[in-house]
Image (cartoon, rainbow, N blue to C red; front, side, top):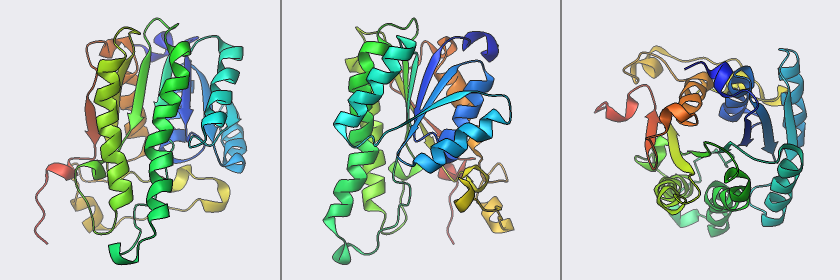
Length: 261
């Protein structure tokens, strides 16, 4: 597949696209010729993302939005529709990323509500209000960015794990619910993805991984945003036209490796 041919003049909206995996996908789709819109609650990061890609002669739009707020999502989709008329790809990537919350007995339940509002309710809102725009596209697709933590856990990560588990279920539910609108819905479940070099300036850091970190992965390294981006280019294209309701783990094989120590 020649992505530069396929994505030319197609419109891609990436939530949480100002940093990390989202920014990596934004760059990849822009390089492939798409009209890319990123949205993010962090306006500083959004402005920096636009500038970063401009230095590579890539153009993206940035529209601030908190995906947990229904009115903001409605306004976002209205702005996208006014400028681009239709939407080919919606990537639900925005999320509260820090999974650790401490012991259950000390846990503030309000945190659980906040995480689910962004990580699970947000993708549902975005899908709902993007649907009229997606229905106008030739090969519409939704891609949800889940996590391998939907299937396995470290201690005291229950809000994040629950939200990503719900997003996996939402993926197959939407896939069978949007058949009349011809919208394919899939998920990518990233594992350990190093995003240090893809953060805004004030939070950027130089990654360092020990030999043990790398050995946890059968492929011998920690993942990069580019790894997720390459898979997203395929899953959102017509070359994946017979794939819907599925989840692809991109984790260097970590979830299939048995570790006893």
